Structure formats: structure tokens, C-alpha cells
Length: 388
Image 1 (cartoon, rainbow, N blue to C red):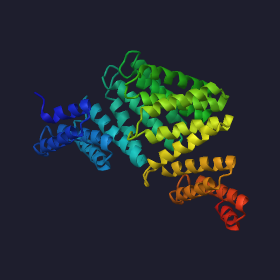
Image 2 (cartoon, helix red, strand yellow; image 1 turned 180 degrees about the vertical axis):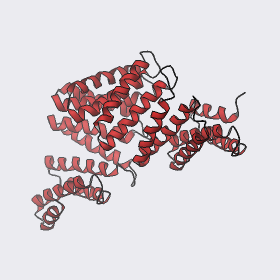
Image 3 (tube, rainbow, N blue to C red; image 1 turned 120 degrees about the vertical axis):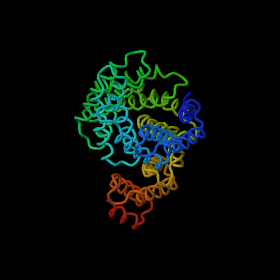
Image 4 (tube, rainbow, N blue to C red; image 1 turned 90 degrees about the vertical axis):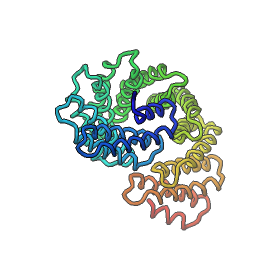
């Protein structure tokens, strides 16, 4: 009979009851205490506790759980025989927790180490190894992460080739077929944005469509597929100006938003994405109701971004920009005043050295200049000049 510490993580994954996972972690800590340094089972207990702590981090976002998981996996790997063919699993577990920590904290050394560990794990995995296709996918994902940080095109090209190889290893009918389609599509979109080859974007759209078909109503990743396809269609609209692409993008974003109700961790992103596509349609055809909806969507998204959230400056600027546009359309002074206050709040969150500081300075300057032209207050013009 499996130990309770093995049963409870499984129960959590089936039913998502947090108390099951909390109890599992306490039991695994107790088991670890019974396997002191030198015990032949200690490395297994360390690794099992690390996996459960990472599960809890993914559910509750407690960074200390993730930090502890990284250290537990590191110690467990150090106790694992270097020539054991199962070492690849342990290397991959540590790499996965490091990649997740990079996504939370942005430390590039975590990302570099994750790639090195994944490549080392691959050396233990011949083509028939059960971890082979997982590692190919994971290396592709981590290389794309590094490309997004450093802009090294060779990382992106390798990620695309790995995802293509992953599709071959996960043919139609495979449980991860839709994930492989989505990963390849996302990397192709990145390359389109870098090099502008429409063939990459067209292929990405077809791959996202195929993934969406496989992720029908009720599928846990359906909202992500809706969102990804919508973004790609908007990108193509910006290149080719086909109205049907933009209209479809809006409808897909609306469908994704329904699947991300209040409380869903991705709801602010969906609100923002729908607002951006509606803003594009407003700019194209000047439908006032689209602009009003854009403002309400940005306002709702901002309310969901806590004061210390890394995306709060962007949310402040997005709402401010849409209010300034409405001021230009209708001349309502309160819209411009609110826009200036929002841009000022965003600038405070973008201190010297922040990657968005220059755009925040510019946005505030433009709005102050608009107010000077409307009211003639010299201090607004002086401040706008200083900000520029």
C-alpha cells in the first residue's frame, strides 16, 4: 500500500483541495526526519518534499516554498549516483524549479543553470526514454525564456527546432499533442516579431487553431489557446489590415475572458488583451462604444493589480492613454486630469533604471502638453519640457 505522503499529493492533483497538499507536506517532512543524513532513502524524501512544495507554490504563490524546493532538489541531486540512468529525472526536477523561480524573480543565473541541467539530463535519455520528449520540450521552453531576456536569436531558432522535434515525438492522439502545437506556435510568433516573416505568423495561427480544436469546452488550457490565437490574429491584422482577423481576435478574447472569471489569476491579462484589440478597432473605425469599453476594461484590470505588482505601471499607463484619447475625441477635461494623475502614479513606479521609465516620462509630458494647450497653464508646459 502506498504511504499516505504519496496518496495525498495525488488526491490534491485530482481534487485541488489545499488541505490535502498541506497535510502531504507535513507528512513528507516527518518522513524526511526519519531519513537522516546517510540514510539510503534520504534523497527520495528530499525530492518528494521538493515536488510537493513546488505544487503548493503553483497554487498559493508562496516564494519561500519555491526557494525551499530548489534547495531540496539540489541536495537530493547531490546524493544521487552520477552514473544512475534515472538521474535525468532528478536533473529535470531541479531545472523545473529553477525555471519557475526565474519567472518569479528574474535572476538570469537560475535560467542558465536550468538550461545546463536540462542538457545534462538529455545526455541520460536515449530516444526511447520516457523523459526524452519532455526534455526536448522543456529545453525549448527555457531557451525561449532566455531569448526573451537577452534577444539571442540562436536560442529562439533552437527552441523552434526542438519544438518541431517534439511534435514528431508527440503525434496526433498523444496526450501532449496540443501543448506541443502551442509551444511551437508561440516561438514562431516570437520569430515573426523579430524578423517579420509572415510565413512564421501564418504557420503559428494554423498551429494555434489546431491546438484550440483539441482543447474543447472544459479543457483546462482552453482559455490560453483562445488568448494565443487571438493575439496572433491581431498581429496579422496589424500587418495586413484584414478586418475579419481583428473581429475574430476580439471574439476570441471575449471567450477567453468568460473562462477567466473574477478571481482567476489570468483575468487581468485577458481584460488587458481584449482592451488592446478593441482599441485597434476604435482606431480603425472610430466606434465610440469600443473606446468606452476599452477604458472600463483597463480600469477593471488596474483594480486587480496590487500596488507592488510588476505590471501595475503598464496598467496605469494603458488606462491613462485611453482616457487621453477620449479627451481628444470629446474634450472632457476630467478625462485628461485623470490621465495625468495615472501617468504620474506610473512614473513613481518606474524609477531611474526601470525599463519603462522613458515611455512613462514621455506619456506624462504629452498629457501635460495637452492640458497646457487647453488651459494655458505655464507650469504644465514647463514640466512637460523638463520631462521630455
